[in-house]
Length: 437
Image 1 (tube, rainbow, N blue to C red):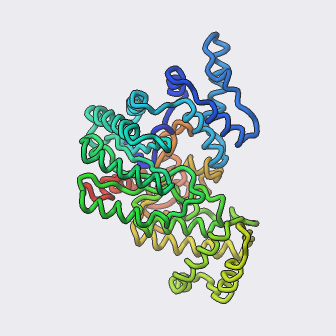
Image 2 (image 1 turned 180 degrees about the vertical axis):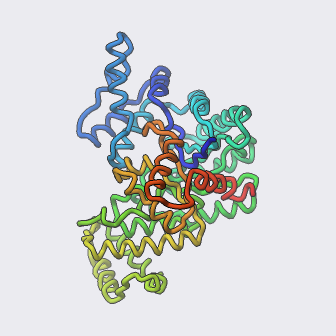
Image 3 (image 1 turned 90 degrees about the vertical axis):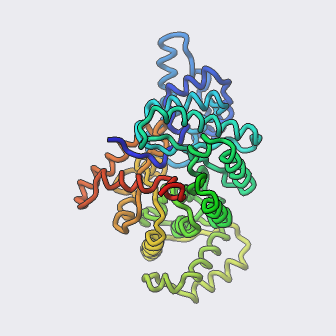
């Protein structure tokens, strides 16, 4: 039996052997990796000895270095993970021939239905962007001819979060779909990923509305809206981060990637938490907009206190404020999360859970800390993804197994591999966007 993977990045699926191939055909742009590594670890990586082939000793040392720099095997944070991915960026050119080869290699070791995400560097020309997307989709079409009908490869293009870029990229994709059958068929979603901080989801509400409108007009080329949110939130309080997840669902996104902030135990956030002033103002206004619903859910809403804080913030010129999270504040976060989950359940939005990724990138350290257990308690729609199986040294079967083992320990009745597999089959982009029923 195969298992669908609805959250997996194409170039996050590369193995160390694939990196040797990239190095053999491209001139590395070492500055991408060196600058990232130095910024993260405060030291310079040994790139001179990273791909030495002369002797067996050279190759052994090179492999040891590559494993150290590339594989992300211990809990850390998003910046450390990004440094591993920046090694891929340094070695790759993502020109059409390379993309075709990478798709073929990944296809050869991928069994089930998989929606791969891919992002290109900002600032490339429309012609270059079109050629790259076409190369991926046409190679996927060729590979799909030899795959079981229920296990095709699909593409979700990850757009840049900056407004001037994602609008342009979306228009290129829609134009390509109208001209190229492979792109129309294999491209089934658009995604927002990479750094979340500084890009509130609500800024894209008009765009998401446009995509949904286009889907209704042109169902044969409809695109699901996928959104990484609540995975990394270093610039805001846990309550604001949970609000971002809720706002992403309310504006119409079909699947939400990770959504850790929605279900993480607020106890992890004890102590002072910094937040930019504007974000705190936005959050207080959001609370007032939904005060009756929140009060009915048991949220301790103190309008006088919030009004006083809001007036103080509007007068304050500080860019950043600090909020202290003790028992009382953590209890409020939990109520807010539960209320947000109730709305997301009602909306029917799907949450993409990536166990290994959340343990390591979100630094949750152990499977018992995953927010998925609260998601299941609240009966949210859940699918499982491998995220970056190459960098994380995992695969989709292992991700299913992690959840299954913990379900058995918790003795949760009625939950097993089959439940999650069926959820995934009903939550593929082509169904959520209305392309197929």
